[in-house]
Amino acid sequence: MRQLAIADDMIRLGQLLQLAGWAEGGAEAKHFITDGEARVNGEIETRRGRQLHPGDVVELFGEQLQLVHDPDA
Image (cartoon, rainbow, N blue to C red; front, side, top):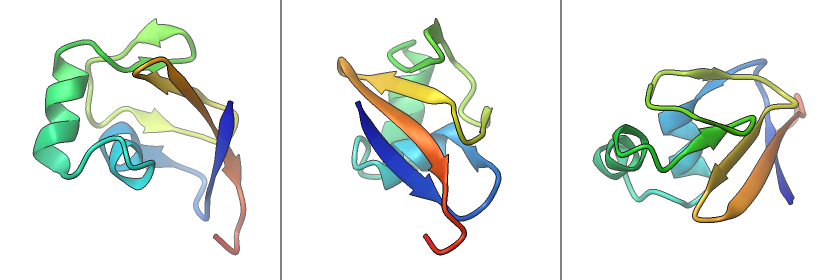
């Protein structure tokens, strides 16, 4: 499982998919999410605006990513 540092206390799921390199843009991220391909903490998430916080684990394409807080990110 890889980690992704975020500077703030929260990031939205659609933004995360782009930042992680899983989606090239918002439209592609929306497609993955609304099709039920993204999981947050083991559960399918279909809301693009879902707020994610450090410690949350996101999974897409069988790859897992855990958010960590880094104010210098």
